[in-house]
Image (cartoon, rainbow, N blue to C red):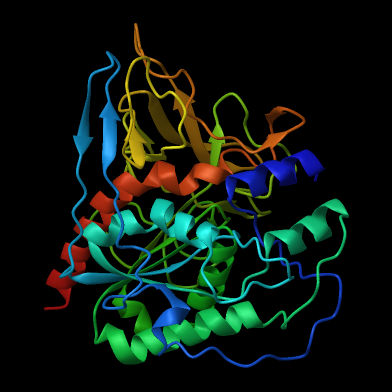
Length: 386
């Protein structure tokens, strides 16, 4: 991986996959376990004083003609289901494994990827000692090693311990959505496979949302592959199923070495489009872009933390011999006054990198439609369990 790519990702405070790699040096064999009864070890949890999900999520919606309005966000503190979320690789800590203190990068990622789901579920997001961006940069680009602290098992132990504490103290038989992105997706895939799949606890799974990763299923079936008993979702009113995809631009499809969405020998990557679970293609996905100060439309001043550009983009699940993925298609409308291309690609040598695609905005592309899907799934789950 080129240094320019790493630098771009670091600058965006965004994500990299764990790639099953650990820092080159050998850390201590074990570390102390994390106490998740302590509120400071959670980014988001109902009732804690510093809740990173209790933030302004208002959105400026801009139409093709430049007209705009502000869409206000209202959470539901009495939401009927829960969401348990594990965030992607964002830590800028100067050590191989992150600490448990939230920095701007952790606060920003729950703002973009999780907090909006607070309108349909109670939100739980533990801090965990993830592999840091610095450690991945050192491993993948041959850069200087970073100081090693802790142990490779710390991240998995933290996620497991947070989940165990949540079940014992907060769940009380409620339906739960488990979601993550990139390194977080790797963690929840492991958690689901080891503790939920084909166990009595599977009955409480409203859905699993596994973004920016690769979940495998048989080519001619929806059950099997990564999970033994949890199928890929095929209907909006289906519960206990998996929503997963990785996003690539229409004009820059995944390269042969792209990790995300790669098909197996006898399997294919799951692609479930949250905006059109049954058909795989939606003309107006509900995308919420983080407002990064760019000019979103000529003459339009944007002061909200998020922006929506309805009708500019469509998405569809696409299958090739090597990959199955979500394709983002940009189609400006006639006389469209908005910026021509809102895509946020991973860049390499000044060009979009086909090995990474639109990994940085997988969650932004899905979040609005996920609100609708999880609301419907939650209602179905509750009716089935009354």
